[in-house]
Image (cartoon, rainbow, N blue to C red; front, side, top):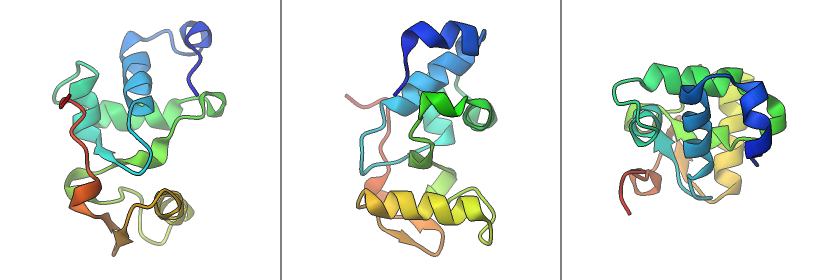
Length: 114
């Protein structure tokens, strides 16, 4: 889980930290999109930055990166990649239905909702 005392030295960028905290808020068994994560972090229109933040996050943060998917619930990694298989495996372990590289719409949460 994200340790606030360590993020300053790890990130040095408030936008990255905001995205990391937002990803940590996605409940187990649900997913959000890169765009929704960016909006909830106060960075509307910066879905790609959300992806970048997950890519550069130190493993020690133990972010639930697998809970973030592309638009329409699509796993963003190439279908034949290990990352795609790992994300699908982790999501299924949390009870999220994954079919043909997409998650069920009912699993997608809009982080802006209370």
